Length: 132
Image (cartoon, rainbow, N blue to C red; front, top):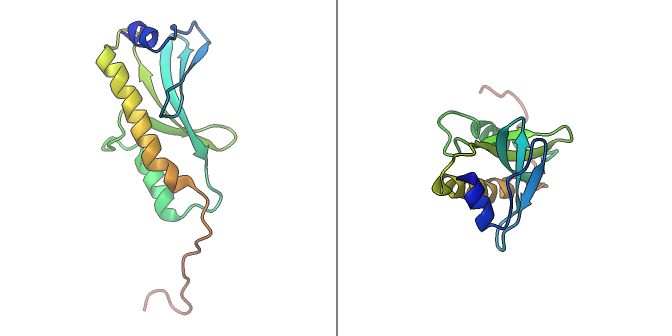
């Protein structure tokens, strides 16, 4: 259960409207929030790069596809343009399901974070007709 998993990590279940930061020795911290009785496990990524290449943007959009390897995790942005990986957890979730959710978010973070680093790369442009 979610409560047992949190106890193993030295945390308690957050009350309505509360959140907990779950810290790890060798992985980014997670946030667990109780949003109207639904528990959301989240991991902040980074600000959306201002000069993102179209391939990076397409990969980020693919994260929410039903065929994505990141499912059931979702990728969202807050009002400041910071990207956030998150997924819902039921209070009755097994210890294995809780740990799998944690592992999935950390794996997605490790995969996506390098893509979000600002780059000075400018794709080459062609002069003349684009269709010849």
